[in-house]
Length: 385
Image (cartoon, rainbow, N blue to C red; front, side, top):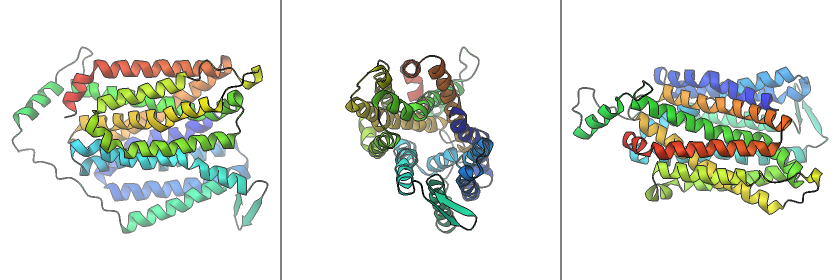
């Protein structure tokens, strides 16, 4: 399962930097139309997986889907190009709300198709519609709608970049001088902050990736919940997460990006560690479904969406007025790499030890991330202004 999930992220890894660079050279419209077309092909291929019955075809179709969806960096760069620095986290939160809603709420449609088409199969020429392929065809139809909107209504606007000959303010010159200082590891403060934000992206994206991969099986083994019920609980809290993201404008008036990162990661870490002491149903445990709901709420409803989105906003602000496409592409690739390494590693830990050990490891990773943010807060605040 880890390798099947990881193949999707592998596609994103190999494509994100190239698509980010292409968005600078060819423009956003061309890049998004091309990637959406690739994703449409990937959806149609994925719909044939059960019919073909090959694990390698599943992996290949997942890679194609990953390549087609490797536009996180492109869309974030587009938002960064057209928004002021002080508003950037709010608009990135709105963008993330759509993306987050996609991967947490859409499982409801998968569960619905599985319920409606259970033990049923319909043939329409080459295409076969059943409980395994319906969701893929649904996503293919969304790709068609997206292509139509990109070709007819999308405006690839750019913010006006100040002339290089323009005089810099005293504050800007001081910030640039600070950013170009060398750190004890031999790289500039600016590059160190970019690297730190990417590592934060890895820790938060990897943690949610591990929980996403193993969460349903954990709900079955430790709470006795069916996959449909567990998926519904996750989807409902995904909707709550979307609401949290849409409230970032309000939160941004009360908290800085650093405070939202630390707060979000803390809530997510507490939600994860709350599951570490539980015994499985097989061993006679009777764990409360309320515990599962509260833990998922802390992870999917509050902690991850707020903490991770603040990381994205902080990274974009640190990059500043420099071209963002390529850097956002590498940032997205780092997150995709985490969604391979963390789930696969978690699978091995669960296999040779116990799934609750995975939660302890993820908790430690998130705590270390918070320590880094707290220690680097002054530097990150300076470069993100």
